[in-house]
Length: 275
Image 1 (spheres, rainbow, N blue to C red):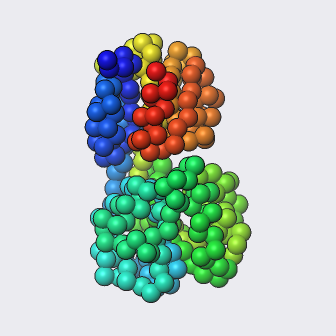
Image 2 (image 1 turned 60 degrees about the vertical axis):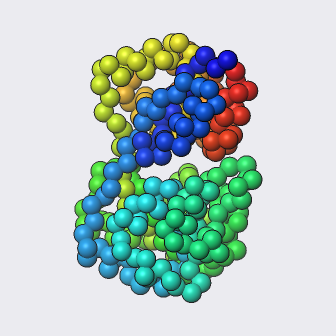
Image 3 (image 1 turned 90 degrees about the horizontal axis):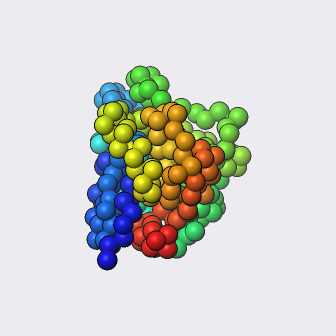
């Protein structure tokens, strides 16, 4: 007998297909209401020069699968990636797999073990901290939560020292504290979707009927709060794939909040235990 609760994913549309298929195969009714849209940041050909000689870096650090995909779409760098000693850091197995698809050998990829309790910057730092030293330079490839940057602003930017540690910024803080020179470049933009009034009504109904919302980003929760600014979430049931995301849901007032590791198999196990 199939579980009765509807499962609502909130992942970007580009990242939802495998999860939808897996959750449906487990017998659940599932829908993806993306709460983050991913858009490429338009970069000019001369911006490739802004990266300089990739041999100046000891590591390219990718904070998400989207960072990998948009980086390789934006820059024709494949021939320039064969740098002796260059490593490619990935925060989780999905990001690592994307690097492999783009031709990066497994021996050059540094990422947390698939058995790690979480896939995030602290876990990445735990396995990579000894691979880079003071005076060496790394490049972080990431997304932007603001408006697309103009040409001069999309060049790799030195990182300020007064960073508030959070997510990838936490990693930047660890690197700079250890004397590592950090550049970053933003290759895609995250923004809130535009929901119709019909979808807003459906979302309100789903909260009241006991659907389980799966959140893999704190930004998704923030965007939902912006879309439905006067909603009381006490009837809502959430499954968060990180402690930080779970805390965001609790702070918003979600009535029931569960945690899971951010893999499809772990999410399915958590959904089973909830039911």
